[in-house]
Image 1: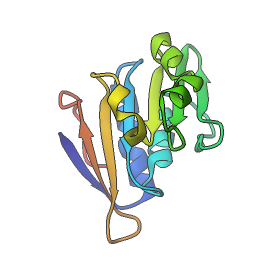
Image 2 (image 1 turned 180 degrees about the vertical axis):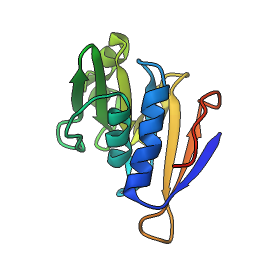
Image 3 (image 1 turned 90 degrees about the horizontal axis):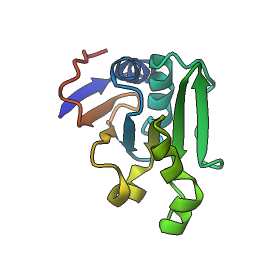
Image 4 (image 1 turned 30 degrees about the vertical axis):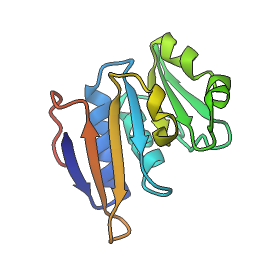
Length: 148
């Protein structure tokens, strides 16, 4: 497990940017964290690291946003309102997994039992200081990432 402390939204995005540069295309990332922890900010940095220039926003109401550049696609899911298999199936989640695109999932707590075994799990915890976060990354110990 890798663990980082970020002190601002910019540092969280920088950490995610480095990860977006280094992880292979087609990686599935499961984000865990409370409301306001920085999951969408993390996704914004990750997309930038994949060289995707997009206005990344929370897919809370759309359930999934697609961001594209050239031959790369990042599918950004929000599973906050997913309560059962039928809800999950209706999002097209399994089709996206089969497509080979990169996938990043907010509120992975709600679908943890169906996440791919090889997904990268990222837990973002708020600290006492409003801007600080502890970010724990499980599943990519072989990737070298430095503290932003």
